[in-house]
Image (tube, rainbow, N blue to C red; front, side, top):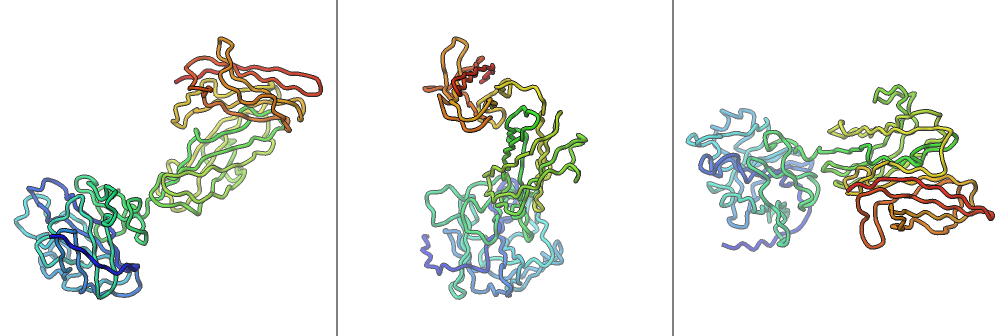
Length: 421
C-alpha cells in the first residue's frame, strides 16, 4: 500500500532522536521485537501524544500507551499507561512484543532509564518492521507537527542505511534538521542509548598534531621572530565555537603547560565537523638555543583530550646561512606529514630582485618559485610541494637555487633536499 502524507511542515516540539532498525543478532532469535524509535520533547510543555501516528512508508500505525505491566519486572521505574510526554524528556516506542516471554535470545536487552515514557503501536510491530532503509515519520494532523528520520522526501540520497548489527542511528543535534549530516551511528559501547542523551549529541572533539604546525623560518636567527601557523581540526560530530589555543614554550620539557611558560592565548575560529581552522601567532625574538613550542587546545566541551596537545622543536642561533630548507626529506603524498619543502631565505637588504629555482641533479629547472621578483623584505619563506610544470617530480635529490640582485650586486646560494614518494 502506498501512503501519500499531506502534512503541515512546522517546527515540531517532539522529535525523533534515535532509531533502532538493525537489532542485535539474528532475525531468527528476536525478529523485530527489539526495534524502537525514541522521541524527545524539546518544549517546556507537556505534550499529549494521543493524536500521533507513526509511518514507515509501508504501514501507518497509531501510537498507543504501553499497558502491559510485565515490563515493570525489568524496568520498574518507567512510565506506562500514559500518553503524556513531559517537558525535556524521552519516550520510547517499542514493539508490542518486546516483553514476550518466548523471545529466543537477547530478550529485553536495553538499559532503559527510570521515568522514560513507554509507548507502542496499535499493531504487533512498528510499521511492518523497520527495515534498515526505511524512513520514519511521526506526525499529528491535530497538533500540526511532524518529525522525520531518514530524509523521506530526498530520493537521491542513500540514507537511511545499515548502521551495523545492534547499532542505532542517533540524531546529533536534537534541534537540527533531518539530514544525513545530523545522524550518526551510536558511539555507545552497547550500540544504543534508548531513553537517554545520545552519545553523538556530546561528540565534541578538536585535535591538533605536530605535522600541522609550521614555523617560519624553520631555523631562527637570533634577533628574528618566529612566525607560527597551526591547524585545528574538528574530528567530532558537532560544530565547535568557544575554544582557544594556548601557545607556550615548554622550557622544562615536561610536555605540560605551566603558566610561566605561556606565550599567548589565541582565540579559535568556528569549525564545522570534518573541517579545520588555521590560526597564527608570532613569537617575538625567542632566546638563543633549542625550543619546544607547545600548543594546547582549551575547549571545555572536548570529550577526548588525548589529541589536544602538539609540540614542535625549533632552534635559535647566530650562525645561519642565506638559504635553509627543511625537512631534509619531504614526502608530498598528502598525508599531512612533511608534504612540502619549506624554503627560508635571508637577504642583505630589501628592494632587490629575487629568483628561486628548483633543479634536478642533471641541472634541469623543474620548478620556478619566483623569477626576478621585487622583494620588499629582508627575509621570506616559500614552499615547494614537489610539482613540476607538467607533472609531479619523481623521487630523488633536488637543488634549491637562490639569486638576489640589488644595487648592482648579486648574491647566490643553494641547498639540497630529498623528495621521497
